[in-house]
Structures are given as structure tokens and as C-alpha cells.
Length: 282
Image (cartoon, rainbow, N blue to C red; front, side):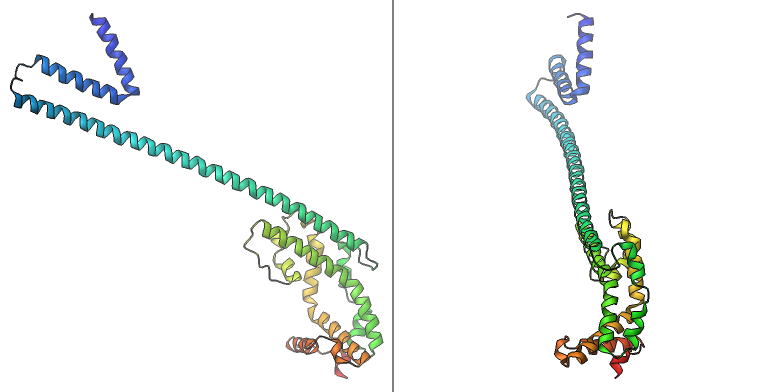
């Protein structure tokens, strides 16, 4: 074998060693050991030969120990990368499921709102769309009758007019809030108090509602009505109390009204510093 051939073979093994350093290192140690055994004149005794073998074996052991450590570290790095990819895949799946859930919730909200609008438009009263909600809360002549009259028939007639204005709006608000709660629960919103009354829910959570499709379209009308109703709540309690007492006096039987309802309304008005309707003072 000439020098050029030996040189080319050496370069080949060195390049190979970059890819597989362990085989190259082991080979070099073996070649070195064989050369020492062949050309050393000092190795003549068994004890010296045994020391040489022990040192040679120790070098191989250290080499393979380092190799095992590096291989283990490489495997752990691969496992960490695989776990990272699995975590990313799970996050993507969770995001897709959330988007699907949100889309389904929006579709359900649309269905609920469309049904409520249809019922509202088919009502026989003055309130047939959310745009009419504001006027339904404006004081009218029936308010004066409910507060000042002691005639049950007048109170019945005025309370009916009052209800024709407010009940369609109340029903729509109730359905609106049901749709909003459904959406927020479906999207796992834990920042909302679902125990609030319908009007309080709208007023307090309008910041959430303005970003929900279909609900945001009617939020202004719903919010305006809900805020007015909360502000006028004592007046609504007065009207209801007048109607209940008129019913009792007209029929002459207190049992037609839920037990404790009249006393509860009176206590509420007392706490608010409001006078009772005239029929409740006779």
C-alpha cells in the first residue's frame, strides 16, 4: 500500500469519524494498542503485558462510557422534542374544538334570537321590535291611575295597558339573556355571574355581550330597556302591589294571591322609602 492510498484511506475514516466518532475512536485505540504490542521491545513479561491490557481496557471502557452518556443525552433530547410536538398538537386540537364549540354556540344563539324576534313581531300590542323598548318604559297615563286610584276596575284596565307595553319586552329580554348565558357557558367564560336577574345581567355584562354575534345587534335596545327598568323598579313594584290588592278586593278572597307576596312588596317599598299605592292605604 503506497503513501497516497494510506492518506486517502485515513481521510475517509476521519470524515466517517465525524459521523460516527465512537467507531473511529475505538478503531484508533485498537490500532494504537496493536502497534505498541508489535513494535515495543519492552513488553516481554506477563505482568507488563497484563498492565498494558488493563490500561487498554480502561481506555475502551471510558470511551464507551462517554459514548453511552452522549447517546442517552441524544435520546432524551429527541424525547423532549417529541413531547414538545405532542403538546403543540394537543393545543391545536383544543383550539379547533374550542372554535367548533364557539361556532355551534353562535348558531344556537342565532336560532334563539330569531325565534324571539318572530314572537315579538307577531304580538298584538304596540311593542313589535326591540326599537320600541324605550317607549314601553316611558311613563304614561296608566301609571298615575295605578298609583292614585282606589277603584279595582280602573286599576285592572291600567295594569293591562301597562303589561301590554312591558311584557313583550320582558319576554324578549329573558330570551336574550338565556341565549347570552348559553353562549358564555359554552365558551367556558368563568368571569360572569350567572345568578343575576335578567336586567342586571345585561347591564353588568354588556362588555361581554357586545362581542357576541347576533346579541350585539340588539344590545343597545336591550341595555337601554334593562337600565330603565332597574331605575324604575320601585314604580313597577307599586304597580304590581296595586294590581294584587285590587284583585283581592274585587274577589274578596286573599288566597288568590301567593301567600306573602303582598307583604313582601310592602316591605320592599318601605325599605326604598316609597309610598304605597292609594288602594293599599284604604
